Image (cartoon, rainbow, N blue to C red; front, side):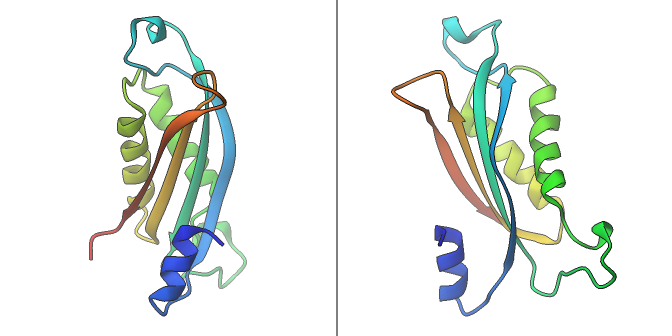
Length: 130
């Protein structure tokens, strides 16, 4: 059970979640000289909690946020060009996901797969302001 799921259940509410795990893209990211002008393999995991009561009433994709929406949020942001910090990238992804009012909380994990022992990165959790 994820940290987000534990917290939601601890608060007495059960929320549905959608997720994308281990999406790997070659992107332009990094602040160091050796990271400029190149792409690096970066892994993304996005978990989004959906507002209570959001469900497909008529078995129609437009009625719910989709894992495609999460993947497209990542792809749209990285397509805009070089980003220096993984923290900046994570915050932008979270903001884009939370723009869908049906999403109330999002976890964004970003891993640079070509740096460090196995992977290095950040994980953030952002919630819709109440």
